[in-house]
Amino acid sequence: MTEGKDEMPTQTSKTTKEEYVHEVFESIADRYDRMNTLLSFRQHKRWRKFAMRKMDVQMGHSALDVCCGTCDWAISIAQTSKTGRVVGLDFSKNMLSVGQQKIQQLGLSEQIQLVEGNAMHLPFVDDSFDFVTIGFALRNVPDHLQVLHEMKRVVKPGGKVVSLELSKPISPLFRRCYYLYFQQILPWLGKLFANSYEQYKWLPESLRLFPDYRELEQQMVDEIGFAHVDVFPLFKGIAALHIGHKERSE
Image (cartoon, rainbow, N blue to C red; front, side, top):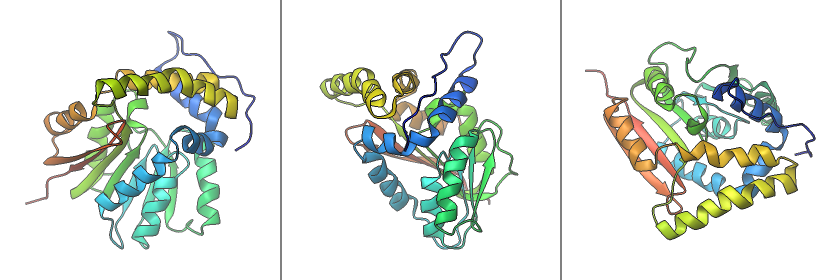
């Protein structure tokens, strides 16, 4: 990634969360991958590999990756599925541009389609995909329950809706240490390595009001209506994998 000199927009009462998040990701797209690796100590790559094992993607399976960002998860699914249709959707042109470069370099342009769109209103018919995924983005959308409803709508009966997301540590002591890093140290690392203090100062706020992994599991069952949800806390609960199973057609 290259060093950025862009100014970070600040959220005001006249700026909706959706507009603000859009401007954030448009401004950090060229630094997104490097900073994710640095700030998570490469854990996000391990978590995504774990998610892929639990998903059990088979040859020919189709998938939609919502808020696909720079397309790492969409690429992993396509490489595993080998022949299945994979769609990556994001509202940031700049993030999609970085992802498209990766896809072309890997020769996956025929298999992966990128769509600029809104996670709150997915532009696909019901029961379209074997898997619908979202990685480290559910806490950023205006209404995570609306997005989960949309993801469940477009996944096939018997298919899986998969969320890999940051969460809140279980242990009180570890939680305090985690918040110290997340709220105080992480923004300064963003400033040091990517000239992006305000972008990374915003990240802790995105998690503050988001449900922890147990609350999210309950919402996915009670409010979204999944038949059942598999939950896997990761690294003492700082992240979590949720796999919601849509009921099969009778």
